[in-house]
Amino acid sequence: MELRTYFVETWGCQMNVLDSQCLEGILQARGLRPVDAAGDADVALLNTCSVREKAVHKVLSRLGELRQARLDTGNPRVIGLCGCVAEQEGARLLARSAALSFVLGPGRINQLGTALDAVRGGERVSVTGFEQRRDIDTHLVARGSSARQFVTAVHGCNQHCTFCVVPYTRGHELSRPLAEIVAEVELIAGAGVKEITLLGQTVNAYRCPETGANFADLLAAVDAVDGPWRIQFVTSHPKYFTDKMIASLASLRKLGRYLHVPFQAGSDRVLARMHRGYSCSEYLAMADALRAAIPDLTLSTDVIVGFPGECDDDFEQTLALIERVRFGQLFGFIFSPRPRTPAARYDGRVPQGVAGDRLERVFALQGAIQLELNQALIGRSVEVLVDGPARRGASIWQGRGDDNRVVNFPAWPGIAAGMLARVTISGATAHALLGVPAAGAKRATRPAGA
Image (cartoon, rainbow, N blue to C red):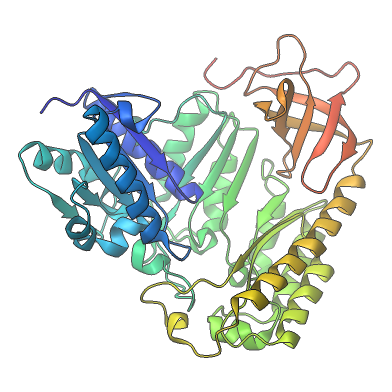
């Protein structure tokens, strides 16, 4: 079976985006080239996410569509399931879907070639589980031309929050050696990348397996690399922001003014059932300490409503925390029971309608807060990393400042994705800023890869 083309479909978080780039790099090293649609590809990979409920149903539905495409056009001849659903379901999905050629868990990305060879030999294989080391040739990662890139610092998670499936689908924490991470950052910075985000499900739990260096040490080493405009990291756990860690963050030259720190619930009773490891007062103290150390810091967060046993008073405490902290961005979710997690077996399930109403109230409050925060920026001059045309059309472009806020502004001759440009904020909505080129300040550095 000769395989010439591929298509990768990515669902979920930044970690899945980077995993897909690794998968693409392996395919390209084997001589395959990308195409724009699964029906035009010899190999189609679904890189999946299992954080939300009904993830398996979504996968089976997509596999049915790919099976029909195969019947209509002959392609994709090989269909691979990757990502967290692959790890969660493994060989069970091979049995349920005849269209599926192989299953490859996120801890086995480096064995994609082995899986393809098995399929070419007539086998259907499931390759899951986790190794002591997760080696990927970083030179093979198909990063494209984006000026924003991801670098993994920590695989997996040891927190075992009662609602979270990640320890089961991505394994336990495994930090990469500090020198290895810095070498990768140097490699992509040398290609002109302007913003580098360090990834980990609990990234600030980092501990170098060779030297014992902590996350502050890693950030200091990355901060010293020439080239990048900004360094970001996601996702952080509140309990690892010690006073010493916060002081270290404040000393960095290139750290962006954006931190994503989930609080999940505003009630100590719910936090204890979630096994989060901190109280509301501790979260608030951390937020105050971060803002005192880093001026104009934008905090982003996650919140879950409708967790089993959440009563009206618990939810009101969540609203109070949102009002108190005034997050620049918030991602809200209704509790979704996941396989193998303790919370899936908890009693006190909140009716879906009640949970839905609570989520709407969260979004309404957060929308009002974001609008106020964004309107306060009108008149300010900011430097943005240009992403490219916005959805409004080719005449309006989009970029983000170092606080991760989206800024939309009119294009000008010579503008290009990957440039750093200065704009003046002229208007605001709850979810974006509007800008105009700052007078005499259409300064731009060379785009990534130029």
